[in-house]
Length: 335
Ligand code: 2P0
Image (cartoon, rainbow, N blue to C red):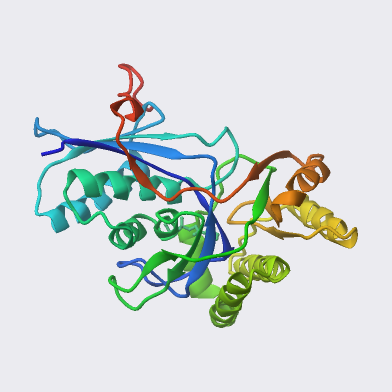
């Protein structure tokens, strides 16, 4: 029996956004979504089964974590244990290589890596679709980080039918413009609830996103980068519009974010194919062709730190024991 496994996963950036759940318990989204898995900022997670009867422990970047983060991991492991018919607790050691303040969500890479490592040690099915379904239960967008390069998450109607799958798409690059590394005031999960409960535009958002996903899938099939960029930008700004329309209003984009969108628009006026997107925070990501990425990065560098990213690998096990995340050193308990 294996008692330890290590997996690595990368964040993903949605071109058609997931914003809303139809079932919070099963983590079924209200619409499908589509994303590019990135080749930077990996999370590496080692899961070790306990043989001493102790409780689940989460170590994040070398520090023992408590609170919500640890509770969320334990809830996830409870689901894994239920499926595996196991009572074994685990030590989970996770390391994020997001440079301080890249502002990219780590819950997608985190739960994709955890689902992959946990499936190995608890002897659950390890095929891509099973791991994608499982990762979804930890964090919705994590089901897409199981997949390499470009993924569509089928909304589905039950646990079985809601998972992400690889699609073919033209080669893209993204330029991440980091404006603010602080923690967001309202979590995505909370703001999604607020959107469903209070926005008069929530139904319109769901309907338009379902249509946009169909158009995006067609644009990917046709290799039409211009159409992909246009659809992604409009979808992102519609998501921010519906988020702002909550009561109380939640606003993730800052004045500086809008300056970057203006910068992207003026690059387009100069003939460069570039479009903007942003997740639940102020940082803006420019979508472009690989050949234009350096010029776009150069042009946007006055706004903040820029990083060029490309399509990356799906979540996978690392076989070399040297890749295991080391134990936290004594005395590093989180205060
Ligand atoms: C996305 N986001 O499609 C969208 C765009 C943020 C904005 O998925 O509640 O961390 O754990 O399922 O996946 C962020 O939400 O939320 C997200 P939960 P998650 O990437």
